[in-house]
Length: 140
Image (cartoon, rainbow, N blue to C red; front, side):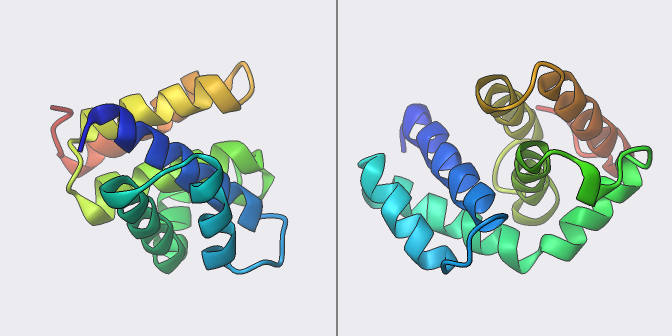
């Protein structure tokens, strides 16, 4: 799958997970609508669905990692956008492990630049850098 399609799939995933923070709609209905809006098809749509399901299924583990690697920032007090971006990247780094850590970090920082606050890219990069250092996964 082309890199650009994977990036758009991550945007769809992030937007779906972000909306779940505030809406009572099902993840499936939010994902379906977001996929349609972004005109995502085939492998990219399947990748987004896999990411959404994976983050939801591992939310507690991902939040525990955030607590561990950003102890000064309680998970429930992080901006919803930063929390969502971190969960997505942590899922790719710690659980899925199909994306090289460097790619997951770079994608997360790009999402933070595009959708987060001014301080989000540095914060996201710092947390994810600590995770990679601690877990011994190389940032290739």
